[in-house]
Structure formats: C-alpha cells, structure tokens
Image (cartoon, rainbow, N blue to C red):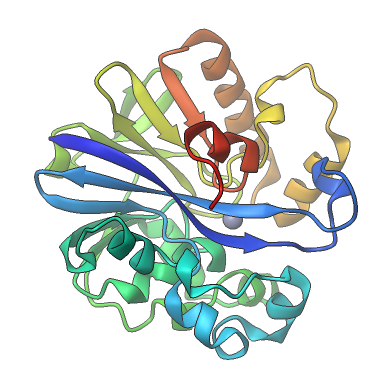
Length: 272
Ligand SMILES: [Zn+2]
C-alpha cells in the first residue's frame, strides 16, 4: 500500500555543456530527481542521487575527472539521508531501494542505507563488474561494493504494460511498484512505475534528459548527440524514447518523470 510520494532533489551538477542540453549560458544546471515513497512496507527510495560520502569525499568516491568536469555542488543537505531526516522520517526505515541504473549520480546514496534491499536489473549490475574505460568513468563501484542486500532482477519474464513491458515476479508491492526495462542509456537501465490513486508515475531515470524530448516533433540535435555519446546501446535508447513519446501522447494518466530535468522537478516542488 502506497501512502505518500515525496520528490527529493539529491544533487546538482553544473558541467560546461548547457548548449548541448538546450539550456542557456555555458554551465548547465542538472539536478538529480529521486522519489521517496511511504508504504506499508517502510520507506522506498527510487534512485539515490549523490550520497553523503560523495559530498564529504568527492575526490575519493568520484575521481578527479567527474569531480572537476561535473562541477558538483558539495552540499550534504542534498543527500537523501539528510532530506529524509528533514522530513521528520527515519532513514533506518528505508527498506527498499529501486535504482534505474548504477551510474554514479544515481547510486551514490546506496551506502547511506546499509539495511535496505537494492532492486536492480541483473544486467546492469553485471556490467558494473566489467570495467572498460567508459564504465570506469560512469560507474563508481566503491559507492556500492560494500552493500549486502541485493535483488538482482532478470528481465527475461515480462508482461505487457501499456506499450512497454513490466518485469513479472516482483511480488513485494502487489503490482504497485513495477520495474519497466528501458534499456539503452545503460546495459540494464529500467524505469520504475508507481501506482497513484489515479494513474501512475513512471520514473524514467536517464531514458530521456529533458521533457522537451517527449514531443517527437522537436528537433533537439545537441541533446541527442549528448545522449548518444553516453548510451550503452543507442538504437535501443531511441526505440524506448519513441515508446515514451507515444505514452506521453496517448496516456495522460501516466506522469513521466526523468532524473535530471529541473523544469519537471519544480512542477512538484520548488527548489530549496
Ligand atoms: Zn544520470
């Protein structure tokens, strides 16, 4: 049973790539949008943004390349763990974490919740273990290598969910929280669908970066270049983006949210 959904802003990055992602100026403003869901099975985090240790020891955790190029705002108040305390809730009540993928800006908070079970597609976790040059930049395994409780989800068993697929055999939340494989940005990237009183929220992680992309008629060359450079499989990414574009058009009861769009975030909450 889902009682409440909070929108958390768990990181700000300002790399010098604003024109590429259709923002004004030179420094982009990229946020890390995460969700905190209050349920009858405790608190559930959807993505974790950057964590306390990333803010305290950015060089060690993220390496100097990310630290310098990312221009990360070092503010421990943005960690999910401190925001949960601010809300008057207990971080120890976080029982489950669903991650869209394990890039450093999504997995950093895992270590702040050692008691929680992390649900992730197995193909995503497996990729973090083979560290090619590109993987070494995007995945910082020291963010989560000590974590003990994992649920590695195979996505061979799926069922139709609107024009996408949902992973079956995830009985924890009685079909109120679903994993929707949205492969492409990374090897095992997934969206997380959360049932609301009416309709759904589909948290799409990095399956798109700006809500402008949900309109197929928009020409966003810079953004598409940026995303294709980051992508593990660009063909698959484009296929899934197309599916999300038709979902946005045809199913108004589904709220689509991605991880990094400031405009989407302020629809729910002003930036503090
Ligand atoms: Zn990201």
